[in-house]
Length: 157
Image (tube, rainbow, N blue to C red; front, top):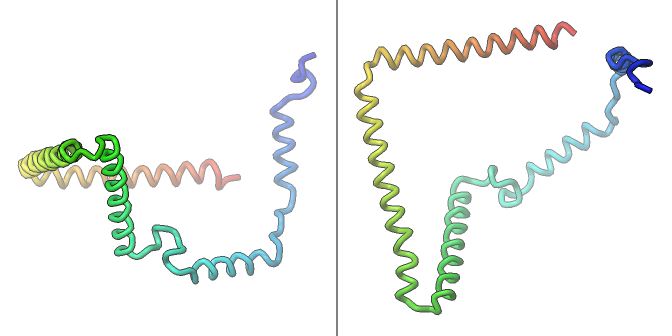
């Protein structure tokens, strides 16, 4: 037997929706606010090294990142040393290639940056201002359309 022949799913959905909307909102426990505020104060009182990485001072983050990179480099050097049988020639060959690759990458990035600098200087300023104005207008239109869609879809309910 087909269940949709006895019950219309859309009617059932509307009935459930109306019933749930008629329910009063659930009250939060009386102690919730105090517990949340106490937890926020406890977390704020933690020393910086026990907070998330984003809350660390900039100098501490930089030192941590440099130490992490150094640790990875030492681990790679130890692995290459073990695989090469502690042969200094193989060790130097293994780590000279990444340095030359990095120098080539820096030269490539500088060349691309110089190209775009020349290209940017050759564009007339009126075009740049026009582009900025167009992007600002499109952003304003996006915000306006988003607000209109929100009002149409959600506020009228």
